[in-house]
Amino acid sequence: MATLSVPPVLTSPRDDAMALYRAFKGFGCDTAEVINILAHRNAMQRALIEQEYKTIYSEELTKRLASELRGDIERAILLWMPDPAVRDATVVRKALTGDVIDLKAATEVICSRTSTQIQHFKQIYHAKFRAYLEHDIEYQATGDLKKLLLAYASAPRYEGPEVDRATAEHDAKSLFKAGEKKLGTDEDTFIRIFAERSRAQLAAVSSAYHSMYGSSLKKAIKSETSGNFELGLLTVLQCAENPGKYFAKMLHKAMKGMGSDDTTLTRVIVTRAEIDLQYIKAEYQKKYGKSLNDVVHSETSSHYRTFLLSLLGATHR
View 1 (cartoon, helix red, strand yellow):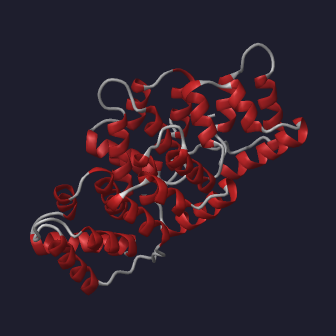
View 2: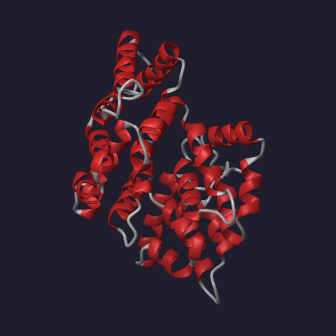
View 3: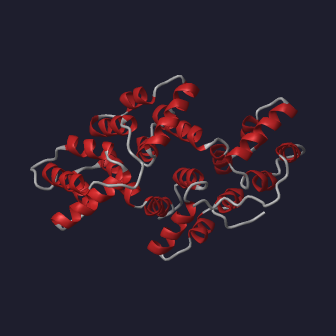
């Protein structure tokens, strides 16, 4: 369930484009007006605004935004502008080939998306960057993480609610033998099951594991694996069981301690705003006893704060 607040009566994409142009003119940029428009438009509406802006002013809106904005608000709005598949492709490409390689970010995005979402952004990845996602994974990742990402990005998975209980029990037994029962870990068994099973089926495996062995599959992963491979398996499992809770934890970590991890904070709020941010907010409140809106308000500032709170549905136009 999304938190995006779109006005009941919208101005036309042409009027929005013209209003943005006025916001850019003069001394300095009227960032508040840019936020007031773009933070309250869905992906299709943003795409139409971009088309109109280019038609009227013969320049790319995103290039103008990049030249007018700075810092966290620039990064947040530029990440917000594309549709979800283009955004995912861009985030993963930067994580795998940018100045700073960020396997954690690449793992989070790939392992938290459905099979359909991955196939869609893989097509865009190739069209936009003239590169194959698998080749970039092959080049940057190593060991079990590489195996997991390659398997998870290529295996087609059923996305419906039906589960096979017998298969779930068989998989739970296989995972127990591959992990807690064994001296060392058979990582390939974990990779195969986690890459091939649907979300509903993997949640059933997790439930069967707990029933059969009295401990959680999550704890088994934590004790048997480490690093980004552990992160990948936990991301797949937690997004199968409760994606809202998984992303609530990510946001909590991003804002814990001195200062905030603005890259993660931006990525999670922007990528989930049109999907399930309402559920994430509810899970955050339930787990930490605080409003996500209040924590974001206290941990961020200026226009960046206004933009994130707009996506969280805290302000209305």
